Image 1 (spheres, each protein chain N blue to C red):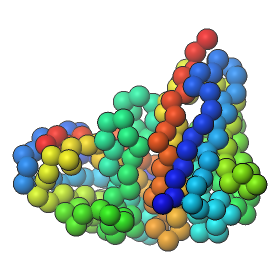
Image 2: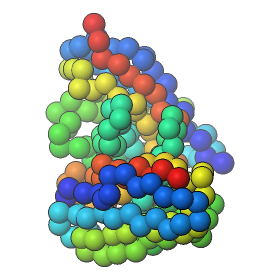
Image 3: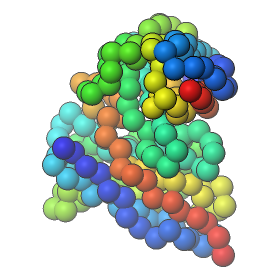
Image 4: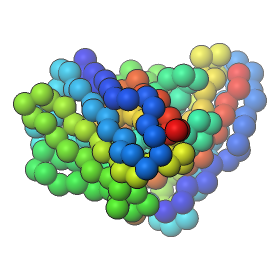
Length: 121
Length: 107
């Protein structure tokens, strides 16, 4: 069973960089059929797609965050990562790493448990 | 694309049918439309993909339909475990993934 696990600091100071890693088990991030995504959800609010990456190196980002976001792959560790620069309180949210599958019409079929990131001094 | 869900909250009894709606501000690309269930403190779970296909392990009480700008999630024979927030999602228009605000279902 494929599993995703987020890791990273739970507290980030304003103006600093948020860095999270997603470890993938029982699947390979080199799979051509999958994209690896980050989704976030502020408390009590809707889900917001942050961005995605494919083994080809192709990335797509939410235009509202594009200037501040970088998603990368580490194939040696079967992990992918999120960096979000110049954070503010508006970036406080639960961050999920997810997998989307071409064969499921890009449905997000596997989710990590989520990690809470608070932006505060 | 902006997704709007209605109603905001739905309160029903076990055994009844729930009908959840999601309307898109523009036509959704192909069949790139999905529904998710989220229970408190948990990550969302994919229920329906490709408008009407059930994800692995999803009971056949759940069904999806629709096209263009109007989509529906129907839950037959409601069970207490179906209490959750349900989100719709489209893929393809900028931003690549957008989600609706959710419908809370209370059983």
